[in-house]
Amino acid sequence: MKEVWFIVGIIFIQEYIVINLYYERLQLREVLEKDWKFILELRNQNYKNNFLKQQEPIEINEHNEYMNKQKLNSKFHQWLAIYDTEDVGYVRILDDDVNIIVKKSFQKKGFGTIMLNLLEIKAKELGIKKLKAKVLVTNKSSKKIFEKNNYEFKTYYFEKDVF
Ligand SMILES: CC(C)(COP(=O)(O)OP(=O)(O)OC[C@H]1O[C@@H](n2cnc3c(N)ncnc32)[C@H](O)[C@@H]1OP(=O)(O)O)[C@@H](O)C(=O)NCCC(=O)NCCS
Image 1: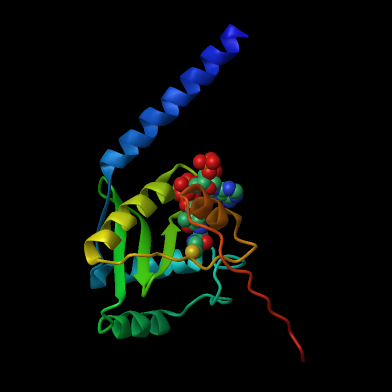
Image 2: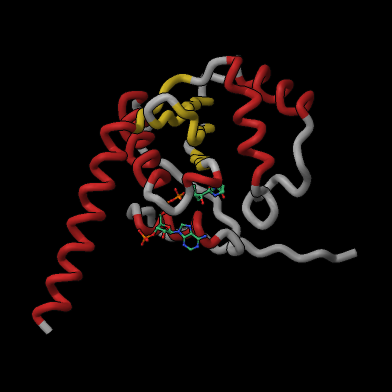
């Protein structure tokens, strides 16, 4: 029994060290126009069953038009997540609505959680008091990340095709 607890302890410490290493090396920076292509790749990497409003891949023109439009929106804030020098994800706040995407090869390593924590710091700096996330029931990873980070489950949303 003692050995089991020893192994559990070692695993726990290892995870703690890895997460802290990621924390030190991960940062959010303002999005530049040159990042738009990477953001489009993220938006198109895994949209099915994940995004509320996206059912098809987004075309570059539509994406650029959207990004251009948001330049004028004072309630739109966005950052790229950089791990050392590599682009690994994207976070955005529109009004109070959070959107977070982690590059596929970096998912399930704790990056999303760190990005969400860094995003909350940015939100506080901007004077945003509440953050919300709309999550599809099919989006397990998103549900998990918000639950894990103490977002409260607030609303049921129903929908029906009637034609
Ligand atoms: C949602 C998303 C940002 C999570 O990023 P991530 O870097 O994988 O998140 P983390 O590694 O910090 O994982 C957070 C928790 O979710 C769990 N998780 C991650 N992916 C999961 C999956 N596919 N199924 C079940 N749980 C999952 C992790 O195990 C972890 O829980 P744990 O600490 O108890 O093990 C990422 O999956 C993603 O980019 N998805 C596509 C875009 C998207 O749907 N965005 C949300 C729109 S609001």
